[in-house]
Length: 287
Length: 235
Image 1: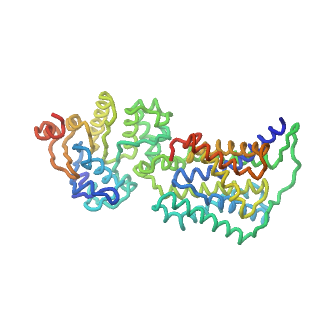
Image 2 (image 1 turned 180 degrees about the vertical axis):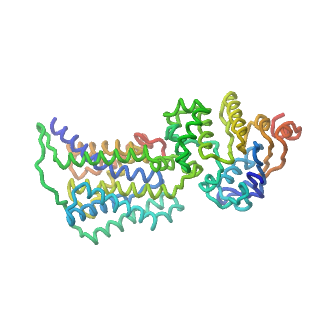
Image 3 (image 1 turned 90 degrees about the horizontal axis):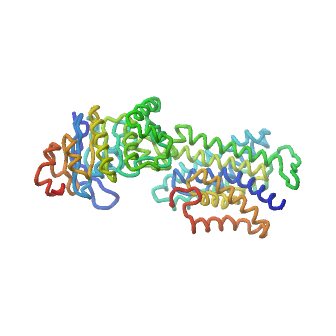
């Protein structure tokens, strides 16, 4: 019983960490209408930006998150403006393929700058907390709280600010948004900054939880993608629900199958969803 | 000076054959002008081109004396053209209040006051303020779409089949709403399937055939022209 509870607890932890980049991925899809696989590189870039600030200036988790958000957001905008934007007329598939290329380039830039080693953040070590048979690290609790805080900020931005509403309007109906005087290109840039920045925040949370290396983002890409598809591509609450579902499913799978099959859960989730409910749990349209 | 003066407009979609083949039309201050005609005559395409959603290949669009032919839709909205499309004319995933607010994007300072006046004019919107727009009935959605079009303080309204899919009662209400708007001095250019009703409330009307205007006249006169009745009005 406690094994099961521990797995669910771990799944909730994983889910919260996955939810942040998954929101970024689904937001970019909602506004720009292509899946950006470069989200993996933005996770890595953010993780390293935070690590750099932490090891060089002794920055704590909060300032590291802020720096990661800005650096990864800037990387996202630079990638879009420097390369992807020109490919948009060729269609979503072309841009999606180009994001895979952009992902490889960014990943290797971080490898060139920081090397292949696993890097850990320099933070005080604290013993795990125990509740009956369950174990949980204080840093994990902090991560979950930070992730929830970030998500609350994103929801508030989308719900209450003029820019957030413009973003939802463009995601809903781009032609109508233009008729109301909203410039979709400006909204696209904002969305990319936000989406890539959130991936960077996810990178720091991930790195604080374990460590960071140039492949850190690529390792969680499938899980992030599965979370977004499961929840319904383009739906932000859906990405959160999807992230918890995939996170818990992955951890539960460890009770039954060897850890090497863990990533198969993501594939299985995508396959099942696309077969039985292509628009996802909270998605509004099949696209 | 005409509010809108369109000369020899040519436009179409992609590489396909042109839909508009030299269409011309003008709207004078205070007028309601209707465009009627068979399906495929290019009526909706004409409105899209005037709103900027479709870039014309030839011809000019002058709005209040200024050439706006090359402007994007945002630029034309800023100039004072407000287009209410026939379909997908509200943001379904936003609430009624958010739809109105985002439609006042160009002038956020004045948006609240204008929304308050629109709630007063269309009480059904005030009732449904917090409902998602996609949950509205057809008539309610059409009213919301029109109210959204008014949030930009337009100098010209373009309405694409505002009564499409509405019950006869809702359609009558909508024509009343259009006439009321026009009484305030707002010029309106609309495309309508309900040709008789539309011409009855219009100052002037145009009959579009095969991508250009083939007849023009005062609204009621056009509605009673035997040749036009025979061809388009089913009588």
